[in-house]
Length: 422
Image (cartoon, rainbow, N blue to C red; front, side, top):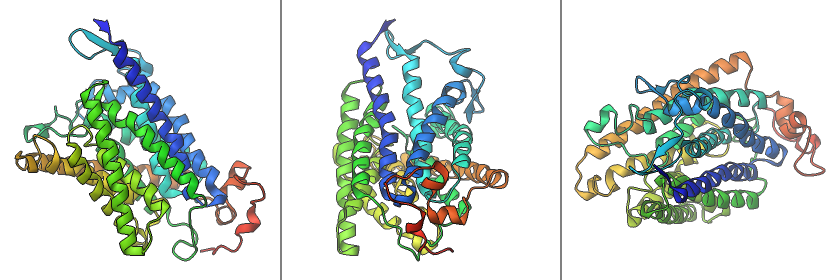
């Protein structure tokens, strides 16, 4: 077989773009945080890079793509440390290949960003050490099995039992990344509890320019996420690129219109959040809807997520940076939307109800699996290490107390003593 250098180069670029998304997320979340904890928020994203990149090489790849154990997870010892039965060549056609090690790098970046996404739900109040331990355990018990089930030939793939109804579609990570992270974020926010003063003390973003810069970097990196998932610089990648752009723009507009009608103002935070909602929703659908269909996917995602982010105040859970409202809600919609809009198999294309039924099934299973795993891991860590920093640390700011530094000179504990000690 001959090495396809073009595909190999494209996948290396795509992997680099996806890796850039996590520092972009750090900026996005950091800007949305309060100034006393912005560094801690950004460190949670960088910490996820450190932990997940190491364990992915050791057992993450093997658990995702190794020999299947009951269709749920790959054998962690099959290709532990990229040894054992690790193949040097990944066939692209009958005559061409790219090195499997390139795919390892690409897939590792997906695992990293998924873990980092969860951190936004628990901003301002958790121990950094507990978060780091959680990152490794959650990736091992939730992300790697989910990746295997959907992309590694497991229960939720086109080789699984539901394929007899219709082949499940998750082009680039609606279930594996966004539903998985969004469900985990909701469970973790409930277990960790609300911030001091939640609902009574203003907790506004401290730097909207940082948030908008982070959203821009996420959008840029997402082309590697979606177009890279075509595994080739070809027409499929082009469709994914166009759909990603169009859906994201439509979602931003949908969010802004919703804000304008509801609140009387279209905000920069709404624009940035709408961008992310659109990116999330089109992720599972990028290669399987038309460009016109992508407009529908994005516009609906923008409206749904804009409405969903306010539910935390109504229902009383403190999803600090709207991970649930954006990633879980838009991820669910994007996954289910394929039942209507997938070209060839969707309900609106004469495909019948089979695709819709399968998309709902895999979405529900993804939510349930992630929620149960997260609850077990979070409760064990709560008992063993504790999640919350002390009240004094939370009120004065995690940055100075835990990390020994502040994002902005002159910002110290005294500035925040007026906060309510709830």
